[in-house]
Image 1 (cartoon, rainbow, N blue to C red):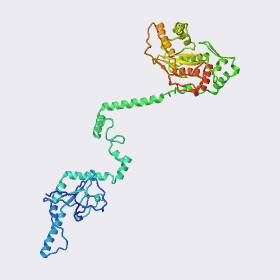
Image 2: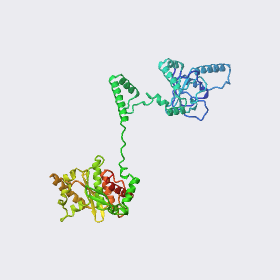
Image 3: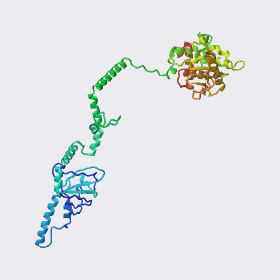
Image 4: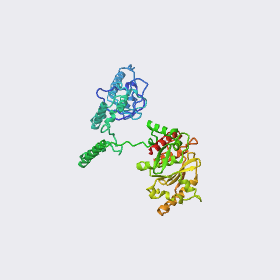
Length: 482
C-alpha cells in the first residue's frame, strides 16, 4: 500500500494530471473555500514532498533530463527505460488537492498529466496542500461502503442545490429553501416557543394525533369557538362613547336661535325658567351674565350646579356620585361671628334633605367667592385629598383648613364617629386651564366642576369660553345639563 505525502510548493505543470471522465465522485477531494487567482484558468499542482516512503518522492529524486540526451547508445537506452518507468509511476498516482480558506469544500479529480477542468479549482494558490495516494489505496476507498454513500449524497445535493451563489440568494428570497427546512409552510425548524427541534416536535405532534382524548378536546375547543363567533355576530359590540366629545357637542341651529333670543334686550324683563327644587327664577336680566365679557352671578352658578346633580341622578353609571354646595355655603361656614361656624350649616346636609349621606359622595364641590373672583374647592373623598382650583393660580390654605375641620365635624355629627383627615393631601392644583382675561373666572369654576364630575381631565382652555357661555345658557333654558 502506498504512502501519503504533502507539500505546499508549486509543482511543475507537467505533473498536473487531467480529470477522469464520469461523475467525478469516484475519487473525493475535499477542499476549503476557493481563493481567486489572477493567473490562468489551469490549476498548477504543488511539487510533492520528497520522502523515502513516497513513490513520487523517489521519482522526484531523478534529475530532469532533456529529450536530446547526450552520450553513447547505452546511456540513451538507460535513459529511455528510466523515462518509461517514471511515466508508469506517475500514471499510477492520483492527486487530491486541498485548498485552505474558510472551510468551503470542493472536489477535484486529477488524472495523469492533464489540466483541471473545474473553473473553481483554477483559482488555486500557493496555499494548496496535495495528498497523493497510490493505486492500491485508491482501490481500498472504492471498496469502502461509506465512501460510496458519501458520493451518492454529494450527487443528490448537487442535483438539489442551486449551481451559483446568486441562485442561492434568489431561492432564499423566494422562500424555497425555507420551505424545505420546515415541517409546513408556516412552521419553522425549531419551535420558537419551546425551542424544540423538528424531529421532537414531529414526534410530539404524532403522539398528540394518536391520543383520543386530545382529539376530543380539540373538537370541543373548535365547537366552542364556532359558537362564540356566532354569538358575537348576533350581538355586535357597542361602540364606546368618546367621553371627550360630549362636553364639546356643538349647538344646533334651533338651540343657537333660542339662546340668541333669550340674551336679547327684548327678553330682559321676562321670566325665562324657574328651577323648582332650588326655587331659583332665571329672567332675561339674570341670564345676561352669560353674554361675552360678563361676570357670572350667583343665580346662574347655583342653577347650573343643581343641573349637574340632576344629570348624575339620571345617569348614575356615567358620572361620579357628587354633591354640589351652592355659592353661599362657604361664606356662611367660614364667616360666622367667631369665624368658623359649623352650626350655621349643620342642617344643610341632613339625610332627609339630601336623600343621601354627604360622605357617600366621591367628590364634594364648594364654590369659593373672593369679592370679585371665583375659585373652586373640592373635598375629594375618592382620592383622600382636599383640592383648590384657581384659574389665576392662586392658593388659599385657609379654605382647605376650614374644609378639613368641616369634614371632621360633619362625620362626628352625622355618624357619631371620629375621622382622621390629617393624612389627606392638600393640593393646590396647578395643571389646569387658566383664564387669560378678567371676566371668565366664573365660567372656569363651573367647568372645573363639570369635568371633575365626569371623572375626566380638564381638557379645555380659554378659547372654549365663548362656546361654554352659549352651552350653559342653552342648558339653563332647558333645565337639563348635557
